Amino acid sequence: MTQPVVNLNQVGMTFNAGRPNQTVALEDICLTIEPGEFVSLIGPSGCGKSTLLRLVGDLIRPTAGEVQVNGKSAHQARLDQDYGMVFQAPVLFEWRSILNNVMLPLELRGMRRDERRQRAAELIKLVELKGFEHHYPWQLSGGMQQRAAIARALAIQPKLLLMDEPFGALDEMTRERMNLELHKIWRETETTVIFVTHSIAEAVFLSTRIVVMSARPGQLLRQIDVPLTLPRGEHTREETAYFQVETEVREWLRKAKGYETHGVEVSE
Ligand SMILES: Nc1ncnc2c1ncn2[C@@H]1O[C@H](COP(=O)(O)OP(=O)(O)OP(=O)(O)O)[C@@H](O)[C@H]1O
Ligand SMILES: [Mg+2]
Image 1 (cartoon, rainbow, N blue to C red):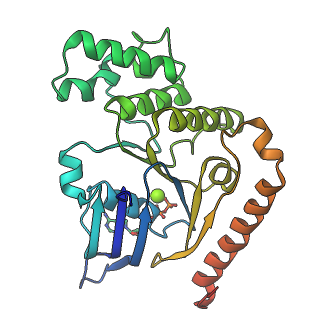
Image 2 (spheres, rainbow, N blue to C red):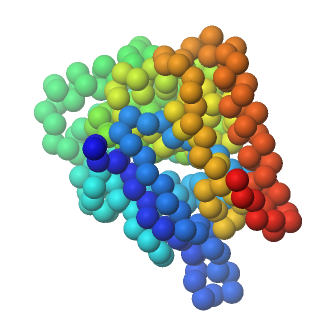
Image 3 (cartoon, rainbow, N blue to C red):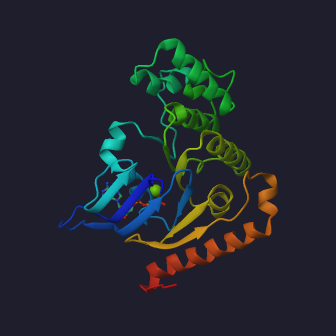
């Protein structure tokens, strides 16, 4: 048996416990992710998707349960630089060129200058930003900046990539192209991805598994395996299975919202 990349055991997250502004964001989350999976989290706004990602990335600590990454605590995994993160808005350093942004994590790892230059150049090519190495972030479009952020996240060859609505701000066509690129990168680097999105189409296209979350307090309502063949491409969106999974996700998302409005427990 291979070791799971992520293992959440009865994880709960309550913000401001005991205070008037207490928020129970997540309750009793049990989730195991195996190496090489591409898992999307989808659910109503405020259901705790970002919180779940931040727990895995050790940006916050759970108030209940345990988060394990590669068989160790999330904290240890972060210290070991086991993952890369990409957020909704690209977080690039404005005063550093694209090349220097991508090289930063390698610099922090103490990699030799010529080596890190070479590695960064490969990644820049992979995200199709060749020719923009010496531009600054503000000289690039939003989508290009996001691709630079993805290249940077991939620089250390993370075993786990955490992505929080990375393409949320892009137009539909750019988004579809980025989906294709990300899919290619995921296949080439054999990394494991946890991907937060509000787009059903994006989730179905990219994922090997989709986790539908209920409204707050977030729980895992339904896990849906995506049986679409790999590699995916333009043809994927025309497969019958694509429409079937899309419909299933949509139905469960409706239930997820009903959960919030009527307080009705949904069971399978
Ligand atoms: N640092 C924090 N302090 C207090 N409450 C927080 C904090 N972070 C998140 N929350 C609360 O936890 C709940 C879940 O928030 P989260 O950001 O995880 O939702 P989300 O599913 O990512 O939503 P969206 O789809 O809108 O991004 C919300 O009610 C939010 O107000
Ligand atoms: Mg969020």
